[in-house]
Image (cartoon, rainbow, N blue to C red; front, side, top):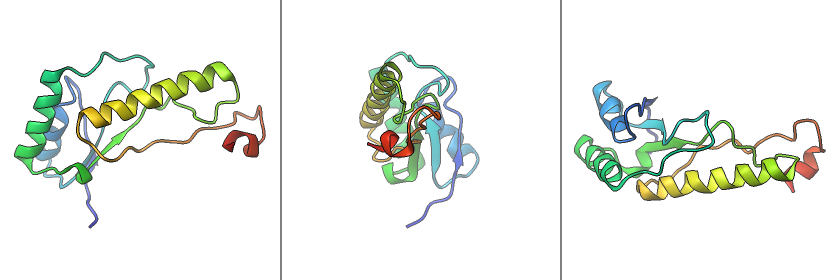
Amino acid sequence: MKYIGAHVSAGGGVENAPLNAKAIGAKAFALFTKNQKQWNAAPLTTKSIDAFKKNCLDAGFLPEMILPHDSYLINLGHPEEEGLAKSREAFNDEMMRCEQLGLKLLNFHPGSHLNKISPAECLS
């Protein structure tokens, strides 16, 4: 089944995303689980996780109807060890956040070689 929705704001807490999606009549939605332009984020609280799940249930959103999007900063093809390590740590955090929220999907961009290594090296 295909779902059509919108990327909605999670401003004020991730639990607000399903409310925002429902408000516009979306049948599915995408969201950032944290600020997409910052490396660090406060951990999700039990209160926020529970509210997100309840709001999804109340609005009829199943996990397959929700597409979390990871940070724009993550570069899993980073040519430098420090940048690659930081990206891997942030990517793992994104996956953990999805798991905490009961989500099955994650939209991510694999990264770039930044013209410092070959595409083949970037992909290895």
